[in-house]
Image 1 (tube, rainbow, N blue to C red):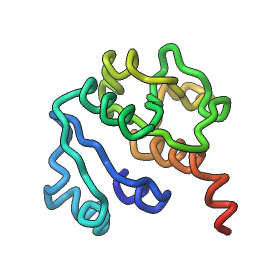
Image 2: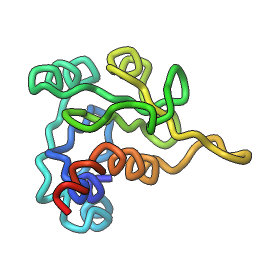
Image 3: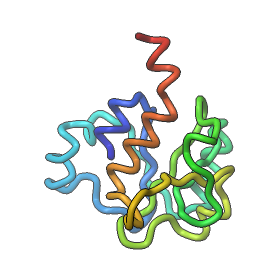
Amino acid sequence: MIRTAEAAGYAGIIAIKGTVDVTSPKVIRSAAGSALRMPIIYMDGAEDAAQLCEKVGKRLIGTSVKNAKPFYDIDMKCDIALVIGNEGNGMSEEFENLAYENVMIPMGGNIESLNAAVAAGIIMYESVKERLNEEG
């Protein structure tokens, strides 16, 4: 997710208490150096992250299957902070309540969810597609 965020042009990462150690060898390898280049801010919880996002003018967009709209129906063109939950439990209820909007990826067949990194990549690139098209 860190490497995808850098490739999509995101400005940084907010890691909430309980997030995997982004300096662990496995993360460093899988991020292909992005974990060393991307600014990473560590915060205690959802409320702190939401306050920071508000302070810097970012709308908090959560990923959820509850009370969520399809990602392609939401305006995510600029100034968003995307919240990705963990593989097992998804986004916390606190983040769901703090988010400006909650988005989901509609699923076909009998699939309930995607891998968190895959889902993050789809939504990250949707949020920057117009900017990337302009930059050509």
